[in-house]
Image (cartoon, rainbow, N blue to C red):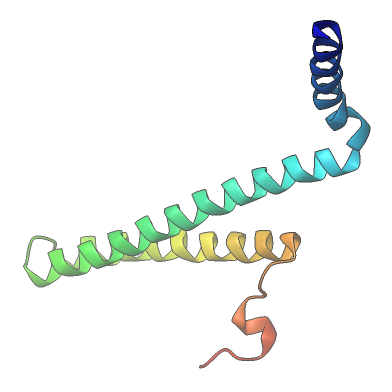
Length: 110
């Protein structure tokens, strides 16, 4: 009886280990999906940090901690960074079959 239980456990372990190898494309697709979702999370986080930096420099300018020239330089830098991140997020979502950017759906406002 114990031999049959041991044999069943070993067979289940072998099946668990071999399944990804037999799945081939689906296993690779699952891994790619996890990588893309991780990359998307990183991009969204970086975009939110760029937005926060824009808000911070606006506050610093209003409280006279940052002069207009420095503000203009930093604002241009963070705005360009946020725009590049938004573009990369849109491209990644399109490749993942995710939501289309608003400007491609024709719902963007001017």
